[in-house]
Length: 394
Image 1 (cartoon, one colour):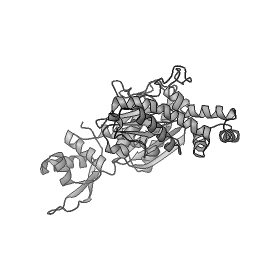
Image 2 (tube, one colour):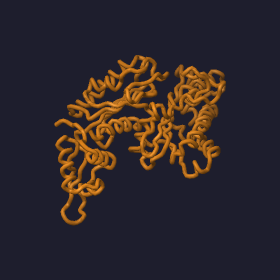
Image 3 (cartoon, one colour):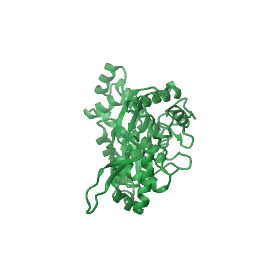
Image 4 (spheres, one colour):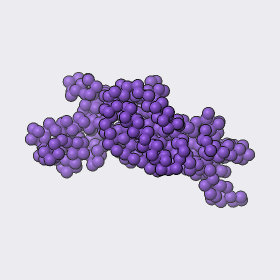
């Protein structure tokens, strides 16, 4: 049985309802779609013939003849790929975008797109075989760089040296024989939040992604906003100061040069070598290098220098958010990607700056919270991205 996709807008709406809300009764679905029972039954039969929906048992009785539950068919599986900062993650989800299986491993993006994309294809193929699937319904890919979404390829970025315009979408599609979509990781984290996280309750929010690469995803009026050329939300290289630290992009004083993980680690190494932090010095002496986990660990253990580094970065990020909040007026700001343990310190500093400097109209009822999806946001968002295409009317 070959999955093709919905033939009309009613079938597309039905599939998206089942994806977003889970199994529902035929009666509820027909009412929600505004379709006569006979028309609804015909549309369901066509989707079932394609292997896209199936019966999931009887629905709760509403009096009279009991209706049956419908759900996305069990054979509908989406693939998700997240190329991260030193790590590659792949996953399979069901039609409701729940992660069923995943694999992650360290990877160096500097080896080039052919090797990294090739490895992602291998891992997806392995998960597909283990699940007993002949074909995936589609695959979403998240990259830590600006992406020309129409082309399915990354744009020039310091985070992915040598990847400029590499045809990620077309390469994966040719290897695995299914639809593929590619986007920036912050965008897909925002989509993941909108589908399964705190953002599910909001139609307008900002998702701020921390890490080596800093980014922002915007959900406005219930949809991901990319801008005219997929460039919206790329806040990493906004200039905070003219005489600040040199950034990987070649400019000075960028957000990422102050707030990215690599920036905090460089400052921590300098503090350790200068003897200003015994805790960081001990960690550096023991391992020969520091990581963001070391900085976070020292901060949560009470080291004042590590805490100051985190607070300074958070205050600068708060300065950026003051402008973003004033411009976009989101209902909530969600922050993801923070190193374990430092979330409360980050939030306290960011909230202090944003609530103090933003207009009351923009922030009176606007919470600033940490993501509750951990590292699943991008995987779920990647599956959501491709499901939007697969569950669209042909």
